[in-house]
Length: 468
Image 1 (cartoon, rainbow, N blue to C red):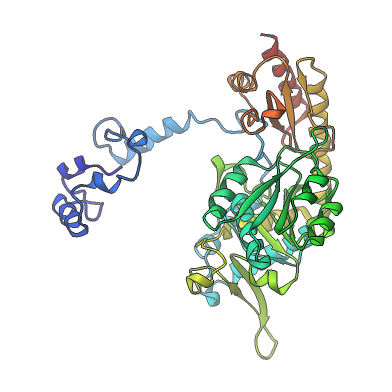
Image 2 (image 1 turned 180 degrees about the vertical axis):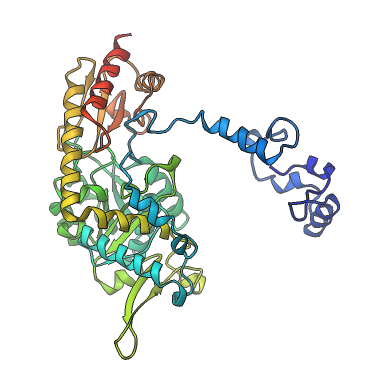
């Protein structure tokens, strides 16, 4: 972190403009008295008030830095060292072929393909990603791509408002709280109103009567399938009909890994489909990078208002060769700012490439078998936990996919989570703050990575935690 004490240091041979006299000149030119003043907008309470403690208190050689970092890295535990039942971003298998292909320099050096004549390989790969994702979602047009699932949701809300000229978005009360935070931040500045719809406390399903009472002047209705709390909404046709009958769009937020066994958004007439592509070969990676999925049905009004980029395929004039190019770039980077559909200034092309490789490896039958395997393992886990007299699982009496709510009947959920972490088992998040009506509860997510032995270990640990 830059601080005023840096003015007392000598210039660093590798850092441009680090000479104290140059720094003083720059500060004078922009009209501030100190480097510290440049950080005045950051609250004092969260600012570091000392130099960074780097290394061993003295300049280190390259070999010493490498050794020090190796010692620190050895203390970091991964999902290979722990039992990870974390939800939201989930622990899925990443095939070796995915890592091998995205590591090729032909792809990672051209991940932003501004020059199509030298980026044909990546452009074709992104075209294949769009095509396979369109098949998976049963939607007509897919972009390539958004930052992550949360920003895709926010951009879908903004797009619905532009298309319908309305400002109200109806969302389920069970919506992913982190997605809601991001969407509120992004849409709030443009005056959109996000209105929650009640849910049935037994099933988690959207309350249709409450939904219909709030549909007037709504730009869109958003539904999560499966929901953040794991259950699968079974009133999709009724919700779709109600939304379209009121002139609103239907936005479906989906887990792509579930679409081998659950209905795709196109099947219930979603206008916009969004989601998080992390399960498709990206791994956890300490929380990122991620992949935002964004698709629309084939309506020109929707396609023209899509954020991000579209990759298209064409041929030479004589038809002898194929070529690929970006055919729609509606970002502020490319056109006049006031006409842009999005201010997102990059994409996740390498992550989209990883997803394309993953989808190609699995194929339709692979997605079906994977989904069935996840359902079998997660439902086994819920039944086993529910047999313990100190827990209830799943809390909602409805079909769920992958993750489910566990209610702790004896101990606070935060205590259970901490005690499990001490035993090398990760669950979560705790739901008590975001969903107080669920009581002392937390999420558990079970995927193809969890064996029966792993699940039995979790169950045994849960029993031990609550018996102490």
